[in-house]
Length: 339
Ligand code: DAH
Image 1: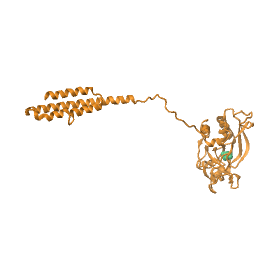
Image 2: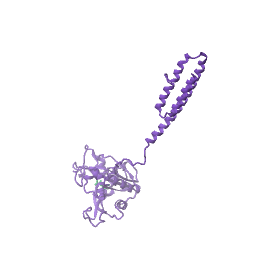
Image 3: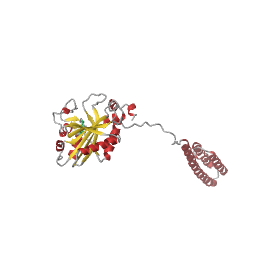
Image 4: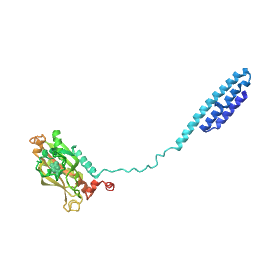
């Protein structure tokens, strides 16, 4: 019987050496150590041997079983490691392989112009201000020295929410909001959407964008306004850009002016973009009206200031050569991709 046990041990070790997968190893475990395994069967035959031999045989069976258990455990660890390595090898990822193409969007031409203008004014020490698009008529008109009978307040020009609330028709109300909340010196620009009751065509849209500028301090003069706008025009439209001022009227500035820039496409000779004029109308501006300063709690005897406002679409259309304003709002990807 002793020989039988040693033979079992020898066979099992032999088979284990040949085994190279976990399934076969498990089968081996069942075959030798399982309930109906070969070693267990040996114990069942114990009744056939001399009683004094039984403890010796019993001990031998236990010893062999322990040894086999250790061997199986080691083999199992080894096979698992091998399996993992194989998996890592076959499933590894080639990080150098080109990835799927991701389609990136681009900034809208209006956003690009706003960003560019912001950069220029931030560089001159301005801050960026913000105000509501649904605005009180008082801020959009009254505080800006625009009385109730002014034509700009007509139903045909302005969208009314009710008698007191409008969709702002200009970014100028932000001037009043800033002056009420901030002590001079004030140096801000405010970009944003504005609304007018206009029909859509190649040069009109009921929503468009403006950028407002406001400077309030002691001893601010028209010379500061001219210098600032000239600097801005050169940075935004090119070093050779010239600027000229024409007298104009705005209720919230006195004196008021409109500023034109020399055409940055033809340099002033006359072309399609400037409609053969050599000049392109750029913005409205002026010295802040004393009434506006007073309305917003600033003493006009102590402080003065200038303001300006211009349309972003007009600059974008001229700079990018866009001929129809509708394209800017339709947002056809084929159009947007070009900028
Ligand atoms: N708000 C004016 C408009 O929409 C533009 C404008 C003119 C703004 C003169 C100003 C200014 O700040 O001083 O036509």
